[in-house]
Image 1 (cartoon, protein in one colour):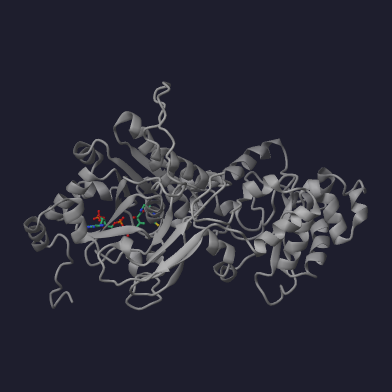
Image 2 (spheres, rainbow, N blue to C red; image 1 turned 90 degrees about the vertical axis):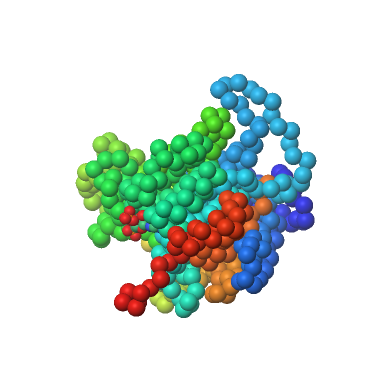
Length: 537
Ligand code: COA
């Protein structure tokens, strides 16, 4: 495992943790106590600086130096791996030919730049899905230039406002580490600036309604002619087909991607989840597509279009429910509670409440205090290998050998009885007491944590998953930092930009425009909101 300079303590990820975790009571106790007093090498610092400063990087910054052993999951892990791969441009094996690999850096881990250093993003995103994607790329080190409509900006700046006159948390929490330039993309001089940006950027990311980019004149042909290396990445609600022209928001995607019909209880309405799997989930998918396209460009020298449709992204996350749809043809889904309750299955994957599947059934159970506290619950999994320990903990040792309970198959038809008995036990403990006791026996479980409890979680703060950031207008706020940890890439969270904060900087330093040209473009009105007439005002 890589050691990082200035870091004395060790950080253990779930993978490393489980690999080393003995099945003994003592080892499990250690795991439980680690949660209470986690070790981490992460260092964070928060600096507040003046709003007048022109460099976002030099302003309110939380710098996190992280060290990671591994243990990333699913798409998030893939995005991390792909980002690392894009850093090693010189180390490639193209067309099956093995080429000389670049010698490993001699710099200490965490001190050789960021994974996406040198990648510049023209960020035409708004609301949540697109900004999630470009924020991730920015955390990996890309230079993200956010283009916003003069005077208005991303609509979320003024949505769900909690501090009058300040950008909303909706905006600030989705647009860290970016620069902002205001451009009227339909103004001739605005188009001039955009064309120059297209020439200098590697990726254009957008999530406008279908056709909006083309209506701005920014067609694929136009972009590709100006910059054949440009990758054009889009979030849309649907892929090609009968709904391709539709506008889509989060819950529409959850409903059309299979999540809503499979979430909730069988006898209740379809439910949407709090996790933003349509917006943030699709942004994550798009980020992976972009780093893959960047990697392919190393070999081909040309850009390509990347599309992540929200319906597709949600369906990808609902993969196991499509699995169950096909299993229905072979008979009832025995791990669903309704099987044990003798309720027949219909012709589509039903809602499964809080069931978890297979030989490891799980439920949410009440804990001490549930009458007053809406989150006094624990998720309890009756994992087959620890069935004996479960029987001992809840005081039913006979169930270990009773043929009615001894095997996972025998238990499936009695899940209600079993979980009722377990709940009698969990109701005598708080969710944290239950967690500690169950972990002594290696029984998988998890307290239902409220957002308040998560916001106060010290271990999440130490790893940089939760970060406090200073903002010149709104003050300090809490945000979710980069959830993907790279062991050789410094991760820092800087505040979101003010509207148009970097317009001058980008025109002069990125595009190299002289004062006269900048003045000419500004005078045209392409970068500023139109003056309000008395009537309009
Ligand atoms: N200068 C000038 N015009 C600009 C501009 C700029 N800098 N930025 C945006 N606009 C214009 C667009 O060109 C468009 O004009 P047009 O309709 O005349 O072509 C207009 O602003 C509105 O853009 P649109 O994307 O249609 O926004 P909307 O508020 O009407 O719809 C969504 C919002 C999210 C529903 C829609 O963008 C969408 O379906 N996006 C794809 C799916 C998605 O990402 N959904 C999740 C969002 S979290």
